Image (cartoon, rainbow, N blue to C red; front, side):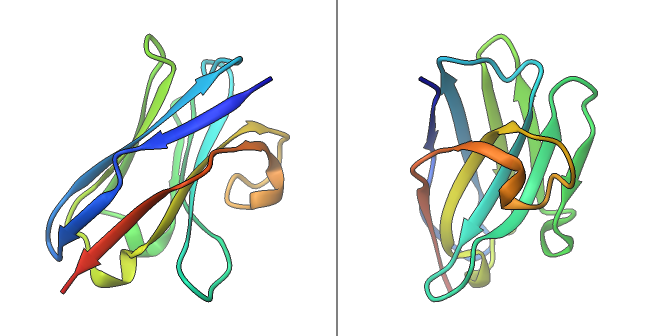
Length: 124
């Protein structure tokens, strides 16, 4: 049974930083694409970033480019999302996803496994 766990969320002032972590049990990220998504209240889940843990290729939503960085540590089987210059509109529950089926990495339907999410709150 594959389980994903996110951590690192919290409350931060606008302009601050947080680093989210996603760790897998029962599987390895080393040959997978891992995505980060977020869902704000009353909205649909949206893509944030993804990393191909084999090639190192990364993808970002336009609104987070230059502020967020996705990375992977294969020795710890963990994927990180470093979030800098946070804005109130970044407030959401952040989810990591793995078990990539193939296709566009920015679509939720291309992942088999999901974590429970971690809350990120940004105060203005």
